[in-house]
Amino acid sequence: MLPIVHRNTGWIEVICGSMFSGKTEELIRRLRRALIARQKVAIFKPKIDTRYSEDHIVSHSELKIPSQVVENAWEILENSLEAQVVGIDEAQFFDNDLVTVCQKLANMGKRVIVAGLDQDYRGEPFEPIPQLLAVAEYITKTHAICVVCGNPANHTQRKSADKDRVVVGAADIYEARCRNCFEPPEKDNNGTIKLKRSSRENTKESSQ
Ligand SMILES: [Zn+2]
Image (cartoon, rainbow, N blue to C red; front, top):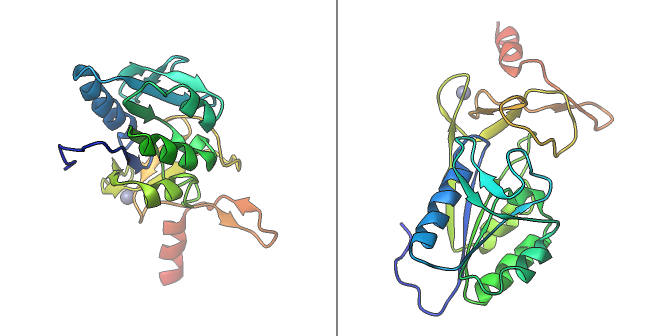
């Protein structure tokens, strides 16, 4: 899918999708191939995500690769001057400065591979991924499998009632759902989000 020959140019690849869709596995696969080719690789993740390890990127399937933890996007730039390939996981936890940093790295001739969630638990685009998709040369959308019906899943269903946009967790708090089975939280009249009980049951009742 990716062209084999790039001459004197960098580029941006984005791997995005719901939780449990294999984004980190795909990122690790690409980075390992670069390491096998003895390319200089620098790998980063945001400080917020230390679910599995402080100094590795770890997939849900327990693949792992060494990484540096950074507080913000600019630290990625500072720490990848020597690198030919730059890998960034959990990109949704950075702010929009990540877009500027990725552009600078690609303009310097580096291959930049970014993985992250493209939607939050409400099904809303999760910055800075939409902005990265717009400027990336290559986009891979990964899919999980809906735990309810088995269709390809594009959404991340939060199972807890937390209303913060960022609640770090795994299968204890989240599961993958398809478009039909995804139940986004409803907003009440004050604009406050409340959790829907079951949209499918509601639909069933109203159609009877
Ligand atoms: Zn489904």
